[in-house]
Length: 203
Image (cartoon, rainbow, N blue to C red):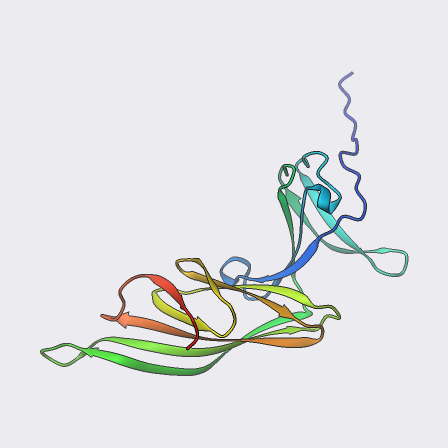
């Protein structure tokens, strides 16, 4: 008769998910952002059918026979085996800080006739700190983006995400901190050859 009725599309219990913190200042801002990640598959107690478009709300048991609201996000159609990510925003219990500890200029290139500087390198030493005030360990994914011709070197394992971005994954223990030390060499003027970030092994 033209009337509509709401029906349950999916009923699942004990859905497994991973919690990961991501730092992408160019995408989410300067603070780490918490994500809940899982897949629409049998391993995560789902996968019987695709998930339709809708609004997902996330709540947590508050220990007092009630629920605490964590956040919400609109989801598009999710095929079977596709990944689902819910952005819950910054978490005050995970703090990220950047600290430049040294800067030096070197490898000067001079014009042959009038001896003025036409190229040089600037080497910056950084120590980034991730503090975890939570009672559980966290997984921390970090991406750093740079402009220009840059050589990047870190003590922790670091890979290239794209020609301007490097990424690293850190594990931070409960109520502890992890430091990520790295150096950035920026080529200026005639020393700059191409717009890219080159990741080099530590010496």
